[in-house]
Image (cartoon, rainbow over all chains, first blue to last red; front, side, top):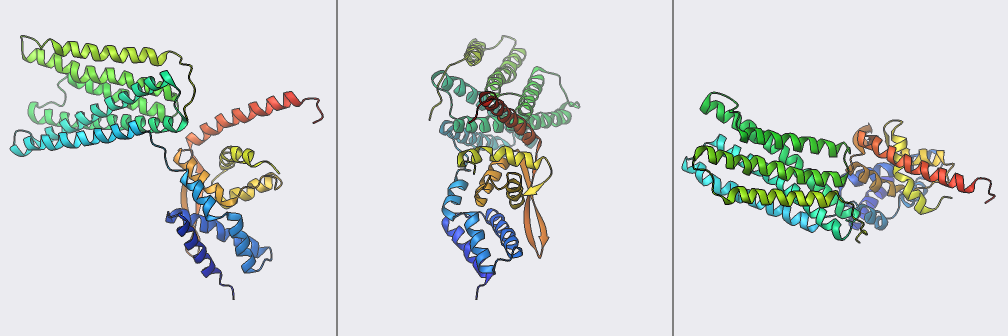
Amino acid sequence: MFDLERSISEWRRQMLAAGIKTPLTLDELESHLREDIRALLSAGKPEDQAFRLAVSRLGGPGPLRTEFKKLKKPACWPVTISSWCFIGAMILFAAYLSTRLFAGSLSLLLYAHIISITAGYGAALLAGGFGMFYVCYRLFQALSQQRQQSLDRAVLLFSQSSAGLVILGTLLAMLWCRQHYGVYLLGDVKEAGAWCVAVWFVALSLARRGRRVSERAMMLMCIVGNIIVSLAWFGAGILDYAQKHRHGTPGYWPLGLAVFLGIQIIFLVIGVAPTPAKADS
Amino acid sequence: MIERELVAASTEPLVLSLLTKGESYGYELIQEVKRLSGEKIKWTDGMLYPVLHRMEDNGWIKSRWVEIENGRKRKYYSIKKDGHQALKEKRAQWTLLSSVFSGLWKGQNV
């Protein structure tokens, strides 16, 4: 005697054994199978025939697993390695700073602010680094669709993270200022720089999410982001140092910043120029 | 019967176009395509789901589980803003191809 429920359970076990292991995917396939069986039963087919026909229409576990496997997101190894290095560096930095927190030389608010801002600026520079990688790569060959997708995802992720972390860090700084100076905003260049970074990366993320800019434009905008971050972080730092120490800043600081900015501009010029290239494999 | 490669290439625009009419689920989408094509477009039923999942990953469509009867659930899909944009682009491509073929085959007895 044919038992439909037992047959469906057996079919599910076979799918699971073949490698379709996500329960929700299996639920969805089972739901489809049941719809088809019901339609076939309504058309007058006997239960066992309806089950067998519905299973064959749905397709075998092998081809289905192959199709679902294709959904795995492709990775671009330079992107993966640098992302993990960045995360590792941030964890080390947070651990290092926590020694000052526990020593009592840093308040929790200031600690959280420094971590947020450093991670936000770091994420922005990493997104810019991916933009530079994109420009370099395109000089020799066009990126494959998979590499492009991987890079695109990473850039969007780090741009959004940067915007969020810089906004959070700035809000924490405002609270800290309120506690220590009685005002939320000091109106100095560092504050202005942070808001510039946040606004740029929010705009960039929204533009990309809404597909208003191409992948290439997004990469170039990230390189522009490098310029904004370097001015907001190191440029503001140089000005701040010069104000506090009236004799000025060490000469290599502005020079280092100028070299960095020059490199970004060179990459932007190369990135804007059309590059005839063949797609890689 | 339409060739497999062509069926595969047209799956995304077909699904997006159907979802502009309202939310739907896999089985219903397959039946609707069969009906509209006079059974000339035949998807291997299970193959639609990886496509639906990829489209969801792309942010073109979204899904929700709905309880239908006796605790059984059905996964409904609906189109998102990015899906409308993707459909617009795909529609332009297919329209262009169609007009190129129309121009080439005009007056020809193929």
